[in-house]
Image 1 (cartoon, rainbow, N blue to C red):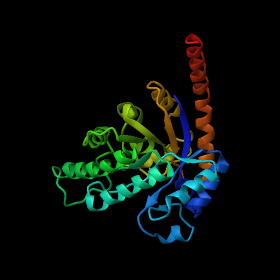
Image 2 (cartoon, rainbow, N blue to C red):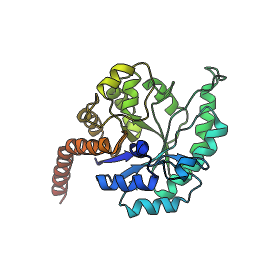
Image 3 (cartoon, rainbow, N blue to C red):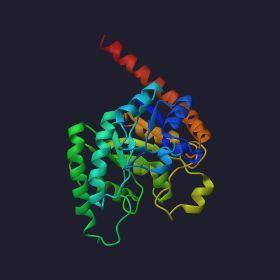
Length: 292
C-alpha cells in the first residue's frame, strides 16, 4: 500500500496565478503531485497568466519539463466534459488522453457533465456509452485510465456513478472518487468509496466545511472546491482505513480553495498516513525476513 498526497491546481484559482506559478507554489508547500486542469483552444486569462488551466494545444513536453523542474509529477488531468455531447467530448477526451500520456499522468478525470435537456431518460445511456467507447479506444492505446467522478445529476448517487462506470467493459474505465461531492449530494461518502474502491484509480480529497454542509447538503450535486482536509465533516482517518482494507495505492488529490488550506490539508493527511506507512513498512520487513 502506498498512498501519496497531491493537490488539484484549483487551490490557486482565487489568487489569479498561472499554472507555472501554481506548480512552484505546490512544490514549495511540500506536495509531490499536482493535478492540472486542461481546456481546449486558447483562453484569455490563462494566456495572460491569471489562471491555472493548461491548453491542450500547448506543448505537453514543456509542461512535463516544468513539473520535473519543480520536483512534482502529475497525479492525473482534470478534464471534465459533457459525456452526453459526443461531438464535444470525444475529441476533447482523446486530446486529453494523449496529453496525459505525454506528461506522465496516469488518468484523465471527468464526470458526465450537464445533461442536455433534449435527451430522454432512455437516450442518455447509449449516448454516454458511445462517448466512452470512442475515448477508451484511445485510452487503451496509450495506457491511460479514464476516472469517472461523482459530480452531476446522474453520478451524484453511488448507483448512478456505478452505472456510468459499467457502460463499457474496459480495464481502463475506473473511478475518481470525490468525497466532498458525494457528501454534499446527500450520499454516504464512506459507503460510496467502498462501492468503487476495487476500481478506484484516483481520489479527490475534498472536505466540506460544517456551515457549507448545513446550507447545501442534499441541494447540490457537488462543489468546485472544499475547505482544508481536517477542517470539515469528512473523517479522513476513516477514508484511509477503507483504502487500507484493499491495500490501495494512489494519490489523494486535495481539492481546496487557497494555498493555506492546501498547506493544512497536507499536514493533516501526512499525520494520518504516518502510522499507516510505519505498519506497512514493518509488514514488508517481516515478509522479507520470512522469505530470506
